[in-house]
Length: 271
Image (spheres, rainbow, N blue to C red):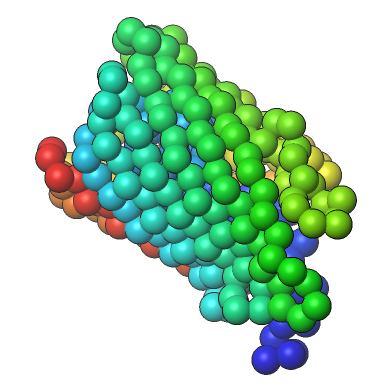
């Protein structure tokens, strides 16, 4: 166990920089280069909260990311959405790590549309960090804001900021929770093909670029691909949309550390 713990600690900076951020949640998002700024739906509760205003309904989702095929580096997440006030509330939970080191996030978000062209969202998260040994549990609190603008039937622009004030964790440490600012663009090229791109800045790290595409192969089946920088990651995956049930599988590929498969399952209580 000690050896695996050392390996995890050594790889931790690579994990964060390779994925962009541990809160880039969702099988579709992962397959499309970890793009999240303009992606609509439930998983916006971990990124751009304005995305919750897109076709809100009662639904829940599960997500699992097996980073570099090591269970100690896995990310597990859950989200539940309830429509309200021309938008939706979402409740979320995310866990990264293992017994000796883990980060947890518990959140509530709300996204609302303001007419056919504009949506905005806000979210609040409680952060819990646990490290084995002589370290105590550390807690923190963050908030997020997001915006989506539909320019026309083909173009959507979006932006969001997570923890813009870069608040500190509790305790004697001066460590701050990273802030994340992203802006992106989605282009619906045709009825069956779309692409998206975004620029992401995380405090203490270099600026990243994420790009992705999606092709509707059949009525229920989607093929996806993408890439992201910081360092380079290649991504690919597929989605099965059966109305109420949506299954998205994906994998990212690091040129040195290998594959990281992802899976998300979403269930809508109404079509």
